[in-house]
Image 1 (cartoon, rainbow, N blue to C red):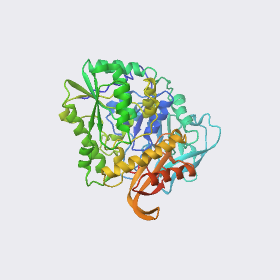
Image 2 (image 1 turned 90 degrees about the vertical axis):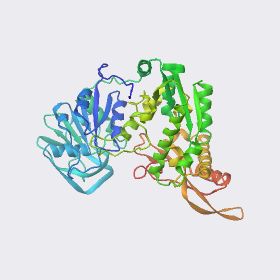
Image 3 (image 1 turned 45 degrees about the horizontal axis):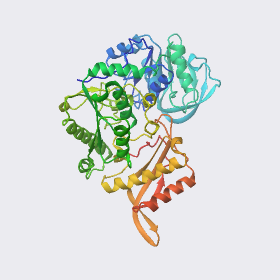
Length: 525
């Protein structure tokens, strides 16, 4: 049985924008931008069961981008119900292309693909562009197909040099389409364009607020758990920490937290978790030292995907073994948040790309015999942080840089062993310490060290040594979907490099990653 406390949108009569996901890396951004305007948004796969769309009763529907080509056979299409509902529609990128094709237009594969910035010329008036001060905008493009011929009853409203039909609008129905991505911060006026759609065109009311969420969730958790005990896997990250704080307020001593130390955490992180949650917050916390178990299962494994799956599976095994020692546990709580749900799910047709395979989302192993409670399941990370602040969690927890679920397991390239973990922990700690000392920690969005699977010749004193290489990574981003490498001062990088090489015997060289996302990812694995 799976129980997930969730705001009852209908009972609160909250206007909702539905985002149909065609597989774009930017789909989450669409939903987040809408929520930032205090309008509730929800993401469903393009081929979801019709009943789920009907249940949401959306005020408007946005069709996301996607990796497929409309010119290929058996690629995703807009379901008929989207048109039958007679609510405003906005197609973005692939959403525009399939909309055009299904309504009688022509889509072709571009000779020249657009990826990155492009200059958009607004050709005609449209409610979408109300309030824009310029006729030319720098917009973010990412596409290989383009609309060649407008569908019947559509008019051209914007163009670029390589995409003469870059935006279109139906002459009598509230159907709009954009080849560019307004949800990406790189697009000038993108937020205003989305606001125009949800407010001017869909007539949504800004009623999605977090102010009342804590009270609502506390009451929901009390009702669902009904005085029974709840077990939570506490990692010390933002999501599980906020979950712990929320559940503690709701059920008090009926919450039991288990902290599995997999040995893949940052330096001193295990001790910090114990200090914060057991000693300061007085939670019922059980610590499990499981590094040897994880390392045994990871021995000889180099493939990144295999490592992720092994770490996820081993965590469940260790956690399950610890849970079996506890009496009268009826519920398992998880710090699952909305991006976890989206990135770990498959479409109805099983064609969607699963991004994060290490997440245990949407269910539990049969043998655990526990009911599931996920009080943050419909919230984005920024909403979770705001919730944590209202729950008076320490800033050092709420503002800590993101840390991957598999921990240092995806920051050690190649096989993992205790020696590599110790080296990386020390290098990473030096980097973070210097960032804080230079007041740079909060100016970058994420920073960490990576253990590379190569060795390099170095000279220390009068001796040559053939030792390990550490890469440093720091990025600046608003949404983590796109990111720029951080332009850290040269003297700062010099100091960090000197400290790492001088203080860690097995390191001979330090390099700095200057790759953006895209084409790279933020993490190395």
